Length: 214
Image (cartoon, rainbow, N blue to C red; front, side, top):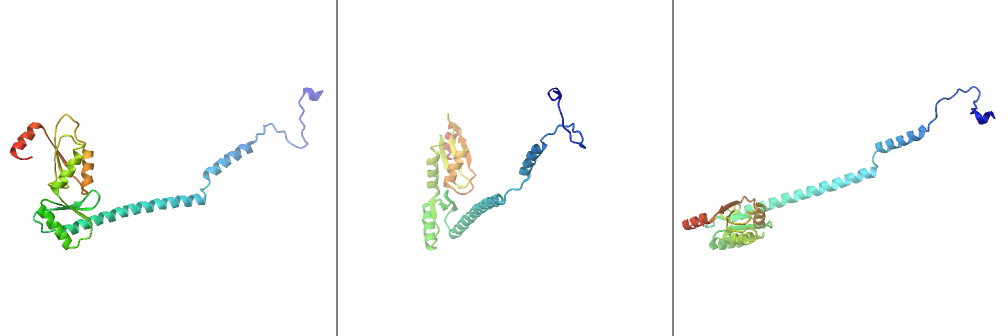
């Protein structure tokens, strides 16, 4: 009957009473310890090797691309210099540069200079690919392309081929997009381009026509 109404605690002799509740702290401690162990654990050796390998490949690829560009640039510069030396003595100044695809481009003013330059390169047995073209012909090619994108186009002036002047007539249409103009020019000319856009209204155009400036 006593056991039914009063709790019974059995205590061994010579042992102290324990008034605190025992908690399974070892479980929590083990969990925290494992998490800390996972966070602080070093990366596996294989993963380190893979990261170093990938970084090495990327560095090698970047170095190759930069090296190729430098070699290509130096090669183009040497070809331009060689052509300038070979073509000294033309009756009028000529321009040696590169086309949009990186090939050497010689621009001359007259048919006489075109014929003379062609014969000169043949006599010197110049083996590298090169295009010889009259400036007027290149102006027409660029005008044909720009006319599709620039309403009111009047003239493309390549008196200084790497500093072209674009003349256009103002009208009821959007203003020229400089990015499109520059991209079109770089498709034909490989030199650093500093273009200038000149706009005219009808009155100015008539006045210049009277002066014979257009």
